[in-house]
Amino acid sequence: MMHSKHISESEENLFARFCIKRLPEKGWSRRIRQIVLSSNDCRTREMAISPSKFLRTIGRRGKGGFREDLGIYLRSTWEANYARYLDVLLKAREIRSWEYEAETFEFNGIKRGNRFYTPDFKVVNWDGSIEYHEVKGWMDPRSATKLKRMAHFYPGIKIVLIDQKQMLSIRRTAGNLIPKWEKGIKHS
Image 1 (tube, rainbow, N blue to C red):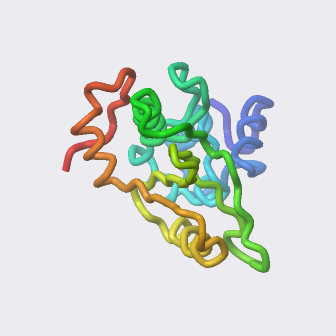
Image 2: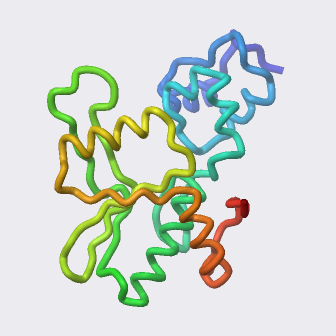
């Protein structure tokens, strides 16, 4: 068994993905350490440093990774399923196109906190209008701040929030019809 003071080369490479040098000594059980080291999903610095925040995310957010059927990397199961739903809308000619994390908006003049925002999906409608769709199962304070700043700095840009209620509705109506739909959203 390897002790926390003796970190192998492969572990250091994994730590680099988490934007930290090494896991904190306190608060990390062996199981959590294994989850962090085996995860392909790059967590934010806050989640990687704080065991309690990391614990709250386990099981709530689907696994990020490359989706062969979509041909892109997505950060969560919900985002992957919503991308599949957008593909259905595209094939039905309800929308012209969609892109994943296509643009990042900067909040000029902000010195601290959230200075950038990247919506999950850019959706182009047939009339040429553009909407940005944000998939959120839970609205954390950081995400709420980004959306407020987006409304303040870019009032002409339409943001559509896809929350748990809407995702459940999509799953009920179309989830069984969409190929490769990933399970993980429970009915409430």
